[in-house]
Every structure is written in structure tokens, then in C-alpha cells.
Length: 314
Ligand SMILES: Cc1ncc(C[n+]2csc(CCOP(=O)(O)OP(=O)(O)O)c2C)c(N)n1
Ligand SMILES: [Mg+2]
Image (cartoon, rainbow, N blue to C red; front, side):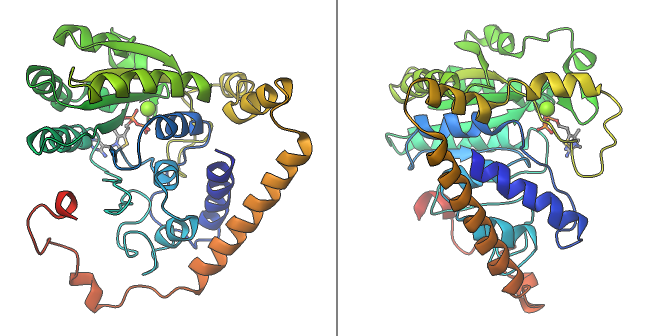
């Protein structure tokens, strides 16, 4: 969680230096969601999410240097410098992206779950999306089919309270998003996303359910993004007090206190972790800066796949 936070703080800096261009949606504040989920699943399972995905990419095991290189549009990036912030992807790490179409990944993740079932694999598809995406029509078609066919999918709504500048209560009268699943008899629950241990426990339950052939499970994970929607967000739709209130529940600080209180870690160990991460970030930035941009010819590569079922057949 700390590595992702420091990586993104660096990314914000690189953005102001115009070394990163285009969109940049930071995950700062939400780290416990991605981390708790990753800790509760297997590396072979599939994860798919929206465009706020630098953290998920890192948790899946994509090296920080490849993430920063991708952000800078370099050929050594995990999407060869042609995806950028919103389109990170790794076949090897079973990370299916990184998607800019709000809610589009709900269909893709449900499709991955269908493939798993069709091929009789012992895997699950973790399909993540935002509170804004939860209002897209595709969610209902997917929930219906996934329940009908008992697909091995865990749907995760990361409710960070806003879709760009629109609060949850401005977009629907049903503000408890987990209740949407009730219409399909899909088990669901709200989860405190500011506590990584709570996320982990909930995801364990959900993953076990989906893996055992009982069908989908829906978690609404309540979280908060400290930064604007993207780098160009004046954030006029919320108060400074509201942001401060959430920062007091910071997931990293919370875990840190728990570890100290339970005598599981010392401040010295934390200092060492900070130092290691600082070195990791510095190395990743140096690597990305020294890397070349893709060549003009490479513009035409990776546009269409060469063989069928590329990510499922690796
Ligand atoms: C289909 C579609 N409609 C609109 C947009 C513009 N858009 C980009 S992000 C966003 C808000 C989505 O909010 P949410 O799902 O809560 O995710 P968060 O940004 O909070 O992680 C919108 C409307 C888009 N990218 N795709
Ligand atoms: Mg949101």
C-alpha cells in the first residue's frame, strides 16, 4: 500500500513536470481495497478494473518500473507505452486492464468468468468498477446472466462516493449500492474499505463462494479518493473538511497503528520499508526516463490480436 502511495505521489509530480501527459487518475486513499483483494485471491485468478488502476497493476505483480514507464509513454511500459495511465495490462499477471469506458469492464469480467466455467478451471474473475459505473445498464445484464449461470465472478464496487463531481446521492435514490444485487438474489454486503484487514476477510468469503461453484458475489467497498478525479479537477463539489475527515481514517496509518499495538512491527521496520520504497521509486523513475518512446512503426502493432483467445490461451 505504501509503495503504491509513494509511486503515485511521484506520478503526480512527474505530471506537473509534463513528463506524464494525458489522463492520470490517482488511487491515493483507496489502496486498502486493491491490496485486501489481492491478498485474498490467487495469482492465477483474473482481475479487471477501470482506469484508476495503477495500484491494481502493482498489486498483481507488474514491476513499478513498467508502470512508471507506461505512464510516461515509454516502450518498456507494461502496455509498450501505448496504453498510458488508463490501459495497463499484463497477460502473464492475469491483469485484464485498465479500461476507460466506464462500466465496460463489467461485461469483459463477466465474459472472463464465463470462459473459466466453460473451460472448467478452478479460478475466479474479480470484476471491479466504481460507484458511477454501477449505474450503467450493462451491470444489470451481467448480474442477471452471472446469477443464471452461476459464473465464478466476484463483483467489487469501489464506492469512493463520487463519479467525477457527482456524488452517489445525486445519481440514484438507492445509495446503498450493495442492495442492487438483491434484485438478482445475489449475495452482497457493504465493506469498510479504509481497513485492509476488513477488505481481506470480506474478499476471502466472496472468493470462496465464487470458487466453490455457488455463483457470483457482490461487495460494495466503501472508500474515498483524497485527490481529484483526475489531475485537472478543481474539486469544488466537496469540502476540505470532508477530505480531512477521511484522511483521519487513512488505511496505511490504520494498519501501522494496528501493527504497532499488536507488536507485529516496530517503527524502525517501518522506516526501513519507507527507505526501500524510496529506492524502488527512484530506480523506477530512472528506468522510465532512460527508456525510449515506441517507434513510429510500433504504432501499428498490438492493435488487433494475431491469434484467437489470446489472454486465455497463454
Ligand atoms: C461510458 C462512459 N461514460 C462517461 C465517461 C466519462 N467518465 C470518465 S470517469 C467517469 C466517472 C466514473 O466514476 P466511478 O465509476 O465512480 O469511478 P471513479 O472515478 O470514482 O473511480 C465518467 C463519467 C466514460 N469514460 N465512459
Ligand atoms: Mg467513484
